[in-house]
Length: 370
Image (cartoon, rainbow, N blue to C red; front, side):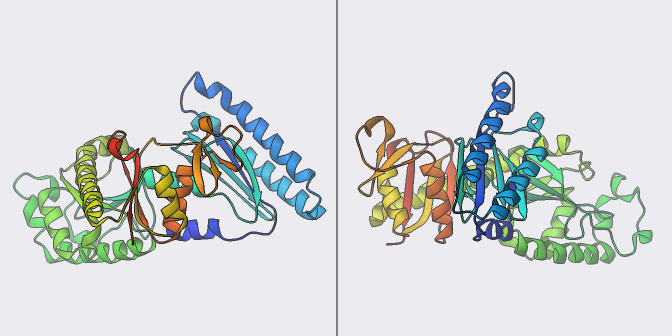
C-alpha cells in the first residue's frame, strides 16, 4: 500500500491498540541503482532483529510469538524491492500484517509495542498530500488518485461515472468543433453532473483531499455550477483530450496547476506565521516547537520538506546527537516525524514548505493556540 491508501479511517485503524506484540519494521529503501543494492540487506538484517526480539521476549505467550512471526514472514514475502520508494514499513500483530511503501526516508528500526509506529507514514502523507482529479466529459467522468507526481485511475465511489441514459448522447458530439458547448447546455448532461457531484461529495467526506477538474471550458463551467464541495476545489485545467488519460499524459499536464496551488498555499502559510509572530503565538526552532507539541498547543506545524534531526531528549529539551555526549535521555532518530504525528493527533494541522523557506526559523515553526 502507499500514502494514497492512508485515509483518515485507515490511519485511525492503524493507530488503534493491538494485542501484544505489535511489530513495526522500518526499512530505508532506494529508488535507483546503485543505492538500492543495499536494500535487501537492510531488510534481511532488520527482519532478523525483529525475529530475535520476538523469540526472546518471555513476556509474550508462545502462541502469540508464533502467530506474529508467521505474519512477519507473510509481510516480508509481499515486499517487492524492484518497485521500492524511499521507505518501507512492515506492520505485524497477531492475526494481521500490512506492508507500506512510502516516498519518504525512514530510519531503520524495529519497534515492539501495543500499537504500530505510524509517524513516518503520517509524515509521508503530509509531505506528499494526496489529491483527487476529475476528468470531465458528457459521456464519462473518470476519477484519478494522485500523490506528488504519481497519478493513477481510481475505481471507487462508483467511478468512472456514466450517464443514466448514454444512448441520448452522440459519441462524437463533444469532439466536433463548434458543437462542444451545446452538449454541456443539455439538461441530460447537467443531471449527469449532479449525479457525479453526489458521488464526489460522499467520497470527500470519507477521504477529503484537494480536488482538480480537467476538461474543456464548457464542461468545467457546468460542473462548477453544480459542485457542492467547493472548498475542496484546488484548481482547474481547461484542456480536452485527457478524459481517458493515460496517467503519463495527464500528470505532467496538471503539474503547472498543482504548482500554482502549492505556491498559493505556501504564501498563505507564511502569512499565518507572520501573523502569529505579531501576536506572540509563534514557536520557532526544534526545541521550542517540541515543547509546544508536547503540551498540545500547536494549531499548525510548518516544516521544511527535507528537514530531519536525530536528537536526545534530555531534561525535557532536545539535544542534537552531535552535542549529547554524556547526556542522559532517549535518542529520537525521527523526532520531526514524531512532531508531525503528535500535532495531527492533537487536532492541529501540518504544512510542508520547500527547503530554505524557514531558514530564519531553523527549518521548523508552529502557530500556537495560546
